[in-house]
Length: 474
Image (cartoon, rainbow, N blue to C red):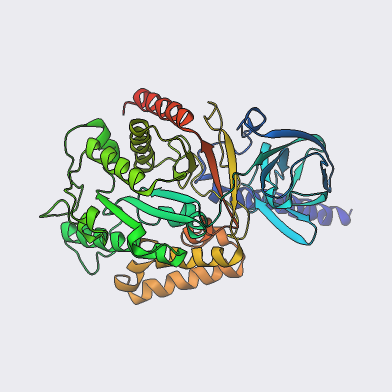
């Protein structure tokens, strides 16, 4: 009889412990769910087997797979299509798959609670032999699996490339490795004169603040590419106003003013360019002028490849309409190169790519409509270039926590630092200020992902995007 109270207490303690574990597991994943506008149990769908690549069946075991003898080897982009599953009760914050080929190790991170079809980027493991795989808080279905391999087009230091960025820092986030290793020009469309009031402690008057912010970010867009071996005359900023590109399209051909910036001369930001033909060219904030400016840039550079945002995969209106204007310009010109479309603000998955900046980038979440594209390019970035990319992003004023140094009272800042120290000690990097959004985590990766399209496919993509916009009322 005397043992029953003891047994009863232990049952209660066990129940409390189980509830605490379940609650803890729920909380571990909740911080991520706020940033994902989709169910992580939903299968991703790029229909890679219907693209211009080769598909091979491999036997996937708990430990990896054998690279098919008949499959192409180095110089390819390769994705293993697999079905994953993560723990339900205690979801990891950073589930990942590590894989090894020869003496090289790689990893790719996934969202908590990931379930269903995913694409493991095994491009750097291409070659004869076994690809060994280890799941960290994530597993996969064994048995037959598809390996899709795309032949990469030759790209070297003589390849003529045009990188089109909607804002200062977009080129560095998405395409630094590409422009640092080719004969590239970097053209930024807007001055970046919108968004947060970063320098309000120095310039409290709104109109003046955004004029100064636009000038600083324009200068960043012209000088930072030099870290990636792009001389200042090959980096240009067209000087359009941040946050206005959708409005330019909706109100075409009318002019659209800056949103918050106080300007005596609308062409102020364009005048900052060191390239004289652009700096002295008349400026007009209208859609026809934007299309014409981009057509001039294509004619000036004569690129074989153009990197720009993907309107269907990128959620930012300026990014979407940058590429709409670019495709219109290419249609007028009849260009016959290849478009490399990147994604900086993935639709329904802003924190992509996940995990540390040493992890490989793969395809962002996509469901539903089939995307127009030909192939996928996983562009490799060597370690020195990746580290230079980190420095280039750090050099961008808009990516620095400047406001804390000027406007935050000492005690408030001390509290923030103490809170940050606690989360670091607990290993909860997801709780650190801006961790999921941080472009110094998201940007400098060992590879860059592009969907590759010809002009015909790009026109289809533009038309599909505008159809979706019309349904939404834009």
